[in-house]
Amino acid sequence: MSTKPRRMFGNKETASCLQVMRVLQSYLDGHTDEVTARRVANHLEACRRCGMEASIYREMKAALARQAKPLDDESLVRLRQFSFSLTQRHDDDGGEPSADEAPPSA
Amino acid sequence: MEPAARSDSQGSDAAFARYVVPELEVLLRVARSLTGRSSDAEDLVQDTLLRAYNSIDRFDGRHPRAWLLTILRNTNINRNRRRRPVLLDDQDATLERLAATAGTMDGETPEGLIVGAEFDAVISDALNSLPERYRQVVTLVDVEGLSYAEAADALAVPIGTVMSRLHRARSRMRQRLAAAGLVSRRKL
Image 1 (cartoon, chains in turn orange, yellow):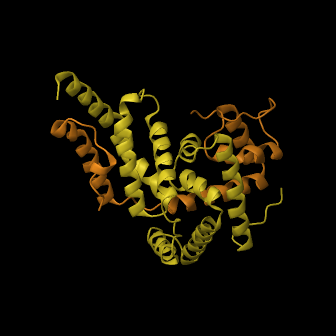
Image 2 (tube, helix red, strand yellow):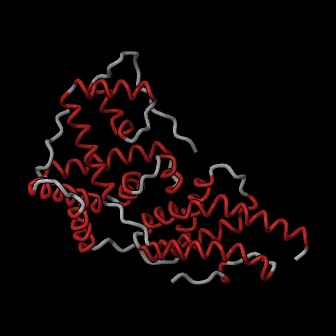
């Protein structure tokens, strides 16, 4: 599945407030095409109200990114070991592993 | 094992090492988002690895992450059919996150720290208050950093649905920030 970048209507170098609000989320996520991104950026520099709105959503995204918890290293080690054990089973018994044969996770 | 069969299994093992093992971290992050619990996430990824291994011969090598996320999602659906509902994150976890965040803000003023911590607290509460379909997409895209397409694969929804849910979820969270007096009310 691929993501098609969003493209705004019109050929002006600067988008309108309404156009910017329609694509602001995609723009902040990096999912707009280059032309649209440039038009939005131009508008955000010139329009204080839209610029503030974009800043709020950027702060929200930053706060959400800070919510990410580090992965449990021990889980990763166990999963790597499990992956390795899957590829070793052919050598041991010549058959494909089944759910019943899977070692339990800690 | 016969030589031909051994050769096939070696090919499968190589494909598994090439396409699956590098995605372990992403799988664990997405599993954590879908299950809400680290222990469940590990079990889910383990089941996913097993299914991926058993079907690696039928995988064409294109878009391994999308393929694995589809397996993960289907595995999770099957597991949920025979298991209890997900428990919600507890309040202590929010406080721990805030404490950890405050500890990384060296160089800021005390007022800035308080406002930053309050901002994060409101965002955390707003995220946990969202309906599950909105919370999942925000967690996958904004917290775990998946692309729209990857989130769509993990949730079995079109990309347009990911975008619309994100837009609505963020609007709701923005309203919570405005209600808390941390940002201006939207005037557009």
